[in-house]
Length: 292
Ligand SMILES: [Fe+2]
Image (cartoon, rainbow, N blue to C red):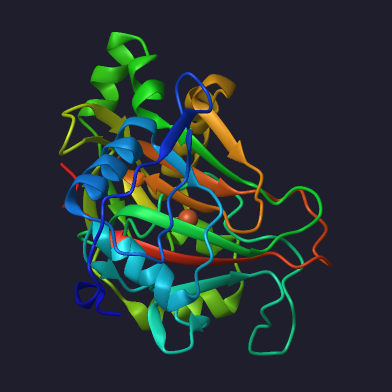
């Protein structure tokens, strides 16, 4: 996986914007080949500017996917370790055909509510990178919402209220556990992680712009609220900030690689597909800074 052993080269590529406030398609680049610094920087700024970027027509195995995404920084492990790519532990596999310990397949799609990844960690991923290897005939897209635009669209008083708030995060919030099953309750007790504090509104380290940033299912409390009030507050906040004009839903084609700048986005998986059809994505995450 050491990409430095091959000579890197400049690759030019085309950027086509998708929507005014979010999304771009990159074509004409081959990520099985190492790219030079100029190309790497051009890719990085395209991702930061557009928040959700689809890199078309890639032919990557898990090791090549990981090696390509390492150009953006250190990869971080997925805290769900049940389905990692064999021999490539930094790539996890999101697979609707995966069976649980009882040999059963999930009946409903996972990750189908708005969130950002691994908010219970001190250094959550700056980028989440997804690569499609099996897709259903219809639906099952990945949606990404521009939280910079959503924040900027709010009235000044509302922005000021949110600015002062902190979230206390853990792997699974206790309010979510109350609706869950004994297995998840046992899992939380086993993990017994300390709460991780993060700002509800974070400032992007590259652009200095602010964005709303949280994972409802991992937020134990928001400043001043108990766990149940917190869930209601975040549910209402999502209703307020997720609008069509800030959202792009990517309907997958095989070979697509989607990179999301988590520092300015929330995302979710589509639940609108037939679970008897296979949906399988490789995922890797690039470690970020501590949110501020
Ligand atoms: Fe996610």
